[in-house]
Image 1 (tube, rainbow, N blue to C red):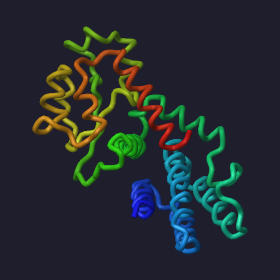
Image 2 (image 1 turned 90 degrees about the horizontal axis):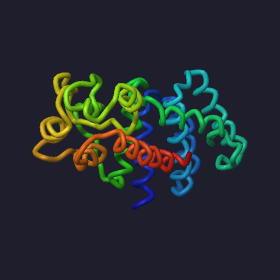
Image 3 (image 1 turned 45 degrees about the vertical axis):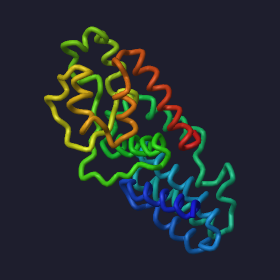
Image 4 (image 1 turned 180 degrees about the vertical axis):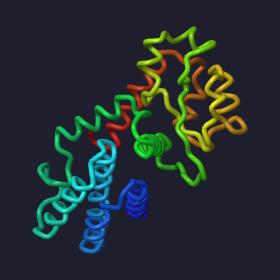
Length: 236
């Protein structure tokens, strides 16, 4: 059933967070509200958003434990967890911190952050149909880290610095990174590195394969579109 599938999907993403501090409030709600799947679904939606947010802004262990403890106390006191001032909900300044991180040099965040964000985005782009059972998933730049060859025809040094590590310039690959592939031109990179048998298992990467060229205008457009998707996913 649809709600059960959605509950399982949120649990899948929560299990990809790099800590397990979210488990106590999740278990408590699953115990108390097991006969109200709609409540559980809504709770897990916002719990995943909070957990992802704390992952993205790199909340420390004390921040996380305190926040989840506040949620448990709300449950104990029968508070409305979906009210704006609930500890389950993101504060305005927290939303701003998350948006700043997502709009910035995402690749320079720790690997667990950039991979979580890109996989979450990829699932959204594939309408929830993506399966992430690959042994290896890596994040790769389209515009390479070294500006050389034909790339210089489209990007200045300043543009290279501006766009290199941004969301709009990143793709997912189901293989280990290949340092030599970074020197390929755009067409060669698409043909030889971003695809297997002409296709990619990631919606995020398939979008790039569909581009005829890679220019600052393309990255800028892609940055805006992908960032909007992330803001929609987490209601930011």
